Image 1 (cartoon, rainbow, N blue to C red):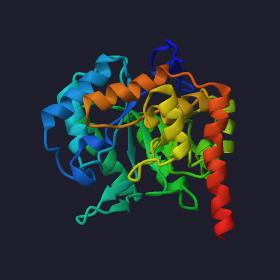
Image 2 (image 1 turned 60 degrees about the horizontal axis):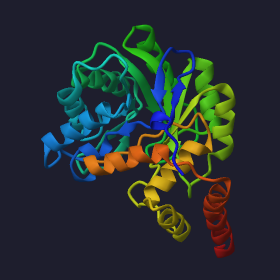
Image 3 (image 1 turned 180 degrees about the vertical axis):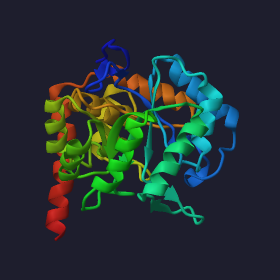
Length: 299
């Protein structure tokens, strides 16, 4: 069953006049293999971005450590000067090692340089939303007060309009809120990875956006016989079902699936029109429950 709400409808970022379509686009896959160096075909990457905007997408997720610098330079080439309603969300707090590793970059100097790299490579005077990346691959315990205070200073200087947090625990989010207004949280979450269920619901009550990264499993794509069976019965792809489930999970969930293919982009955006029945949602909810039960019995 499909519905006609464009791109899953809109969500207004808390404390702003910014309405984002809930189905956005993530740029990580526009860089070369391992998110390193330029893509094989820069023109194809430019075409994907223009197709996304042409389809109505107004939420582009990026970072200057993709490439590094590559995806922001492609965004600028494809879209600058930017349409008035397009919001580019970037993140700082990590960097790439020469061996292509992902490293923390949370010192004052690294954060300031990261913001200025984003400004320069995107060709803007102010960044619309900057997420502070807490952990590199997953949340790490401890205070984020020091790095977040640096971003709050840059916000007061007019270099950043809004601040979000990424890869954080609920406790770190609460700490962040005491320092500055937080408009979004970006964490790892999908139909099989559901540690943030209670967190999402708490954020929804505050009207704060939750943006799951790796909505399709990331570097190891989702594998589930339940997902495959449901997709076959609906004559859509498993990935479309996984995205539709996220959109129906909570109205504050915004999606940023990435791809370097126009056909795959259209497929992802098409998931916003897929309306899952309550029975189908119950079946999909069983995937995570069964995975938890399997892990517990293994111990």
